[in-house]
Image 1 (cartoon, rainbow, N blue to C red):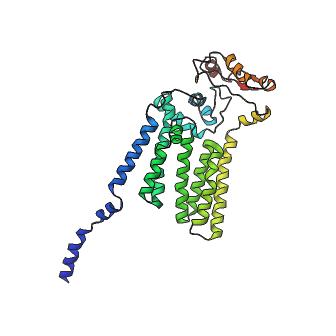
Image 2: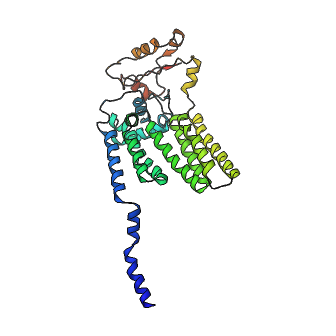
Image 3: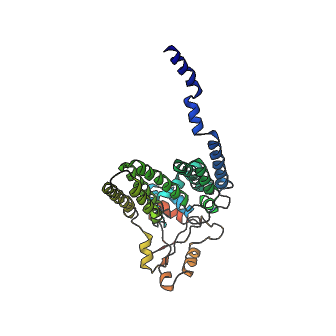
Amino acid sequence: MAETSATITQVEPEHPKGHRVQQRFPAWHHLALGGITLISVFMNFFQLGQNGFGSYYPAAVRSMMDNWHNFFFASYDPGGFVTIDKPPVGFWFEVASAKIFGFSPFSVLVPQALAGVLSVILLYYLVQRHFGVVAGLLAALALALSPISIVTNRDITIDSTLALTLLVGAWAVLRAAETGRLRWLLLSAVIVGVGFNIKMLEAYLVVPAFGLLYLLAAPRSIWKRIGHLALAGALLLVIGLLLLRTRSRLTLALTALLGGAMIIAPLALSYPSKVTDAQEIVAVGKAALSPKAAAGIVTTPCSSPASATRISSPKWLTSTIV
């Protein structure tokens, strides 16, 4: 009996638990992922913001920094009269960054660049979970070096934020398909609903794939799977429809009234060297419209005295349809 114990004592040190874990997750995987992450950081952050502002969205970010009303409604002008053509959630990160680092091209673009880096890391873990570390590293490298991904990560159009959000939703639905638990499926629906409030119907492109995955792979009876999907779909619609209630000033309604001919002129903050007068902005907008639609374009003062003073400055010019 003593000899047996001695033999066991001698065998155990040869296969320690830490050694088995190290064999399963070799250090080179982490080094490779770190290298890919550094590549993504370089591609997304190198000389970020050197070209300044290339659209009217930074002007909306600046307006949203003024007060909670503009922040919640994604207001285009300081007076909170006009909203932009996107939901507000995606721009909240850019507003927070501008508040922390100051309003500049770099601070406004940082959230998108960071979302691109996080998407590379998250994609690796999602792929390697089912297909191995080599496949995960190849997927992460492809995303990090994809030209369209790099361009998007260096732009203000919040596509990178949406991509990261949907990857988190993919993680949740994978957990739901593995366990069959309703809470993971509902979490995925909530995340996709948040994505709808980032860039509207683009977020729903993944819904058929998510639903089909759960329907085919979840370890539940077919009727339970269908019931779970129905609940998740209802929750998804509820969260998405919250957008319609909060954004009561939809510019799409004005577009329909004018036969689709709607122009919201960029603030002079975006193009300070080219635009110096409110009437010049209106003239540019009218030139692109039909006579009937152009007749409805006028400059509009802000409702609050504080904002009205600011909007009279060349950096805070706007025109709206009335």
